[in-house]
Amino acid sequence: MAAPGQGLADTTVAALVAAAATKLAAAGSTSPRLDAELLLGHVLGVDRTGVIAAGGAQVGPGLREVFAAAVARREAREPIAYIRGFREFHGLALASDARALVPRPETELLVDAAVTEVAGRLAGAPRAADSLPLRIADVGTGTGAVALALLAALRRRRMDGQVAVLATDASPAALQLARENAVVHGLADRLEFAEADLLPDGLSGLDLVCANLPYVKTADMATLAPDLAWEPRSALDGGDDGLDIIRRLLLRLPGVMARGGVALLEIGADQGVSVVVAVGDALPGWRCTVTADLAGLPRLARVEYGPHAERGPHAVRGPHAERGA
Image 1 (cartoon, rainbow, N blue to C red):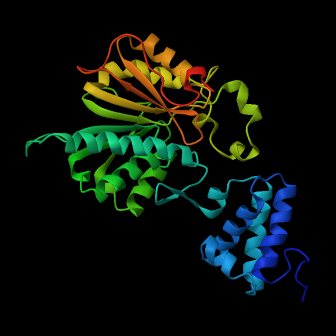
Image 2 (tube, helix red, strand yellow):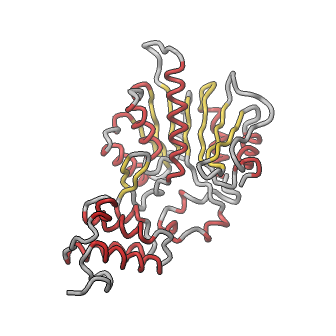
Image 3 (tube, helix red, strand yellow):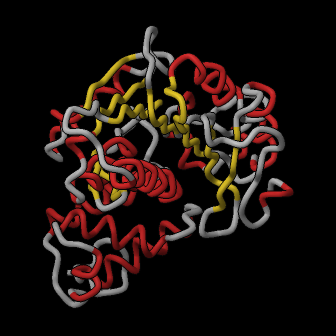
């Protein structure tokens, strides 16, 4: 039997993690030890804390082989979420594979803003018993992350029965993945799905539109991290300035949104100013504010037109937003 410290053939949890982390660092991973711990935890059926706590435990040959195969996949820069088959997002474990973009932590800001928007409308004023539910669309749903996280948060507040949510995607494969995630989390009966280029024809009266659409500049696609080469290009490439698809959605908003409706759009960290200009060009009289993420970078555009919306100059809010950093 190999002695500890001689690579993936070593038998203790700690030795396996250390050897794998060395391999992954050499392959270019920016978080090699975390990757190794997550992969071994997945193989062993424990969380990362369990891996760290069981450093001296022995791992049998069968599980070592499975772990070695997982490490090899990660050395090729396949996303951890694809190897494990899921990604944690806003408290949910969502199935994740090559059918859709891996949900990112940055997108949780979009979910939080949507929850605040909906909860404020539902709790802000008494609603008649026969009031229609708030109508919400998650455009480009992918794994279903935004729609499902929003519904799960509203369910905890006992508000999910007061909304009607439509999840759309141009990819039938992505929609199927979103349906699978909805079933797993017991939310399939709370969602409607539609295959559409942004939004179905004939749709109207939306109170809230949420969208995490492609916003990477085409010229930047070749410089992205190798992990992203595994993910659908159509979910990343946003055209020359990254806003082509977002602009197409903006032009659809007047025909689909209710008076006073709001659209929440995730944007790139360098698009804080350009998205405000895009809204001004496409939607004169609408208001656009940009909120920064925890890193202080522009991340979320809120687009609104209604009786209480201000006309005139559009506003950019948050650190660095004024220079679009």
